[in-house]
Amino acid sequence: MKPAFFLLLFTLLIGCRNEASIGPLEGLYGGTFQRDINEPAQVTITFTNGRYSGTVGKTSNLLVLPPVIGKGTFSTSGKTVSFTDETAYPANTDLSAALQGKYNAELRNGKLILQRDLDRYVLEKK
Image (cartoon, rainbow, N blue to C red; front, side, top):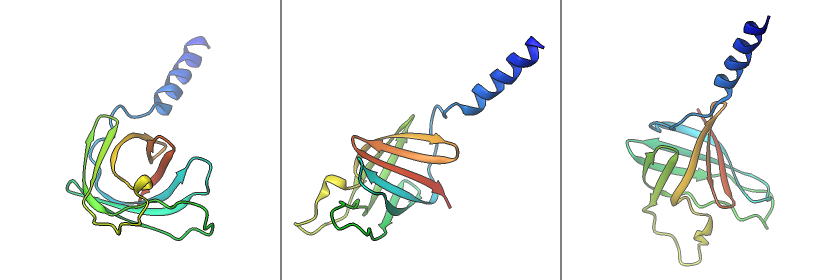
């Protein structure tokens, strides 16, 4: 009885662990962006050969700062994704929510989670 219990426990622990590396990112991902406690915004991001581009859906709350997703290059290293935005934005654009710089990355239950400070993307491959 004890060996069966420990085998089951070991299997559950292995099955629930997070990936050590997120590996290469390719394809279309859709999901949400959320800053701190604000309501989430719908986003899509396409990763192709070290380049990315994205779109942001409309939010129903005018007080919520939506993310800014343009286009540019990205690279992965372990559990980090680094974005370099190449988009020329109007001067009045609030770039504090732009997809640029380094994000902690995690694959959990088939979802790609990108986190930096108060910003969090939860994405699924389409």
